[in-house]
Amino acid sequence: MIRRSLPVASVAALVVAVAVAVAVAGVGTADFGASATDATAATEIDSCTTIEQSGTYVLTSDIEDGGNTAISESCIEIRADGVTLDGDNHTLDGRGVSHTKGITVSANDVTIRNLGVNDWHYGIWVRDGSATIDGVRTFSNAYGVRLQNAKGSTVTNATVEDNLIGIYADSGTGLSVEENNLSGNQIDVKYADSEQS
Image (cartoon, rainbow, N blue to C red):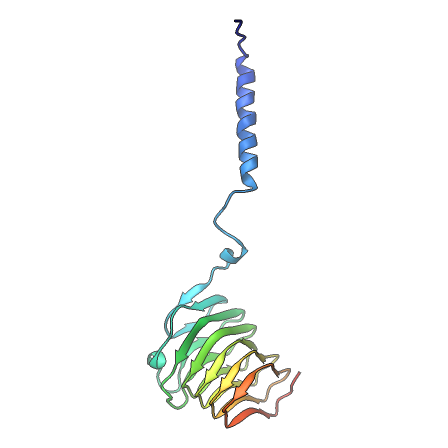
């Protein structure tokens, strides 16, 4: 049997070629641990808070008995533009105290979804901002949703029930209230100096 030796340079080139091939083949299937969703990972919240940075926030548990919200204050206050608040089907439960708010929005391009809000003066109050309120349930509030000086705001796919006023829009423009389940409210929807889209 005859053995031939490959020159050292050939062996080195072969090893490099195999290493490059393995590395290139692995790039297409490698998991770098981040996706487009992960790059903007949601911030978890489990208590009353003020949101002052854009991004996605997810409620991780119910907030009960007002979460220590003081009179005339909000449990969750959104002050930053470009915020999505996903309730993940949890509930903000108030104490029925006058002028408390489950959620106050004073920013633009805000989305609130998948959330229950009950037993507040204002369940959700959009004041001087714009919001999409989608798939929420507001019940047993004085106002389920109040849109005050809101612009380009939408309430859709919401269950609004057993409030004194279900949805109240005043002094807003480009408002859309559609495809909602309204029941048991003393007044379902009231517009005062507001323009619907």
